[in-house]
Length: 263
Image 1 (tube, helix red, strand yellow):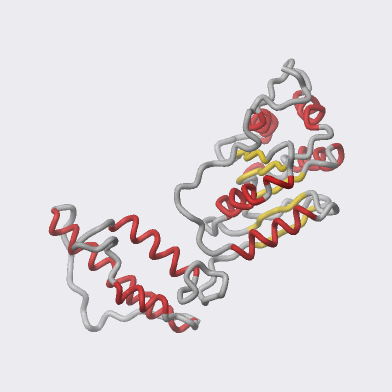
Image 2 (tube, helix red, strand yellow; image 1 turned 180 degrees about the vertical axis):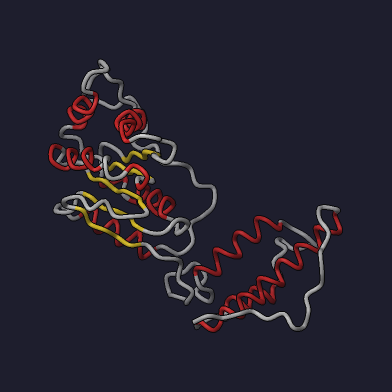
């Protein structure tokens, strides 16, 4: 294989997403703006588990394909048990074959020399702090390479730009797919529709009343409406499941059941 070309025929290896992303338009725009800044070469997408760091990084990679003529490459680090395997995992993502087992990190750096690429290191937190040495070497020797890292904690590495990620917005915004419903509620209904499936002649088993309840939330206290709507959705799902023999409802909701709203 010639070292000046990638084995992969595609310019990316980004995972295929079967479900549309909800919300996050602003975050994707922010990250694209950071990637266009020549002075920023390392971006750490930092947040708690479950906030959607990986999905946001993948969607940003798709949006950034035109910025990197030599490709956008996703490196899944969660399965790795040691920082020593990051180099081989990166080479596998790129489709690069080492010429020998000696000094593989230097071979990888030499291969990426002068290439304008985006490397997405996903789930780096459990490989810290030892993995920062590779990150720093990439920064020092590959001026055209950009790093987008997802991690539950910042890397504390030189030239790092930390982008904190929080949960989805619970208030409506003009950029939302549904302007009458917060992004968090849209995601909730999307997952409920997938779990419950079609029933009782509707395209989905989410009651229209529940949709209206979620769509009307415009304040923190309105999360009580979300709780009530959630209960209605799950109750409808359990009834249809019980009718089909999938499960049996344990009890009916009491009038004393209330949704707690903590501000």
